[in-house]
Length: 434
Image (cartoon, rainbow, N blue to C red; front, side, top):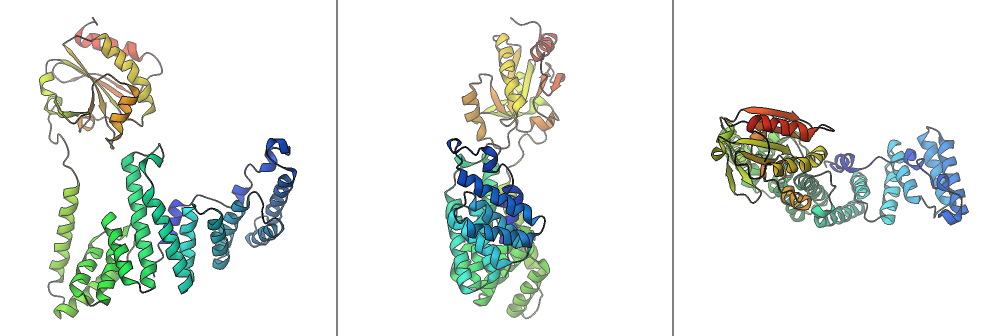
């Protein structure tokens, strides 16, 4: 059985251990019960720090000391942290039973701890008994139920919706494949096939395809086995659900092909046809680059926030002032109010056009941000204009003269003097403000 849980855990588990227990212990906050820490809790904390200190760098001693500590203080305030430290130390000692014991204890204390459930799943898989695998399936189902209910509202502010969704899809694809592996090891082939198919539908991956091929082969469904093994062979070896050995997949594919055709003749054409089919499907998922082949700025057709077209050709003969920005760019947030005020200074001047040009990959973030900030400068999507102008950092402000040539460029936002710099450049290009 391929144990993908360990790979998942390395990606999603935070660092924990005795070092974390030593950080900001309650006893350092206050010994005053009125401050929220009782004398008993403070004494308990002192004993915990002593157990850690006495162990030094000896992980075996640390396990002994922490187990003794829990026997003495079964309701210690930081019991969950001690469980985490024991899980890590037991893993380092390669004591799977110990690590599993405390991982499941922690899950009982914190049933929402998906990361610890993943660790428990991997340890239960390794144990391999029927009872262990059944518990592993239950944990996997609980994690999946939780992940499926998560909404973008719960994402980190550092992630765009697109980035968040990509992470969620990878995690879901891995979890469905993981549960499928456990079900397959219990000979629950129908349930396993359903989970592998779900994993593949979320993110096409070689692991799910190989397992589907194996299940089809066991059922003597050789055409389907050939199809799935071909996909597993053509797809990248390493994907969201883990890694396959392409040489092993090739052996399985060749074996089934020979059973059907008596020879490997035609197998190469089958592999190439699968490759071409996957390539065509991928190409259809990638939207064509906008304004590809544009020769000058006036060849561009940008989009307004509502999706309507904004061709730049009618602006030829005018001076165009462009501020390139993104929702995640802090300096852009500082610059835009000044940029907007400068645009207001030139309101009514028909020789000028101002645009805030957005470069976000996830365009869904932009309308809400603009509405919240109440920007009144016209906002458009870059649609390749940023690449054409070689905009590599944000914010970047560019003035195009009447012929579309760059008359002024400022990369970054100066701490002071921006209004004066840009106003002077505009005056040089088109004349003073009204």
